[in-house]
Image (cartoon, rainbow, N blue to C red):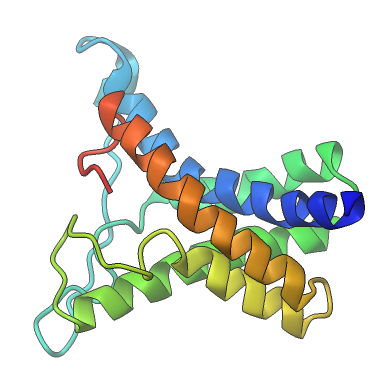
Length: 171
């Protein structure tokens, strides 16, 4: 039982941190005083319009996302017992899962900031879990457990972020 719990956390916590970092790095800029030099840094969204006229991936693709994908594996590698390649795969998979969820939401007609059940809060864990099961780094039991815990904890984290003015939308 103890090793199952550890395996769930070993997989899920870096996924959660990676996913939250996309929002936190961007939000940190807005939390500094108005005349602070960090406010002068322009962080562009890379919006791509698909052939159907809808955004291809939404406006979440930012330089800050790339910063997380590149820097977090080094931090995880120091703190947790796995290879650098494992963490690069994890951070990239979390990002790719988030993008796939965004693409799916746009194709299903969900607007920016609207909540899509089972897509929001789970897209990144589902994608990363599938990749890691395929690579042999994850069991189905750990994946399903991590997914269920994510569906409980992620909305709570979003509500807290909304109350702290880090997020614009509650969910």
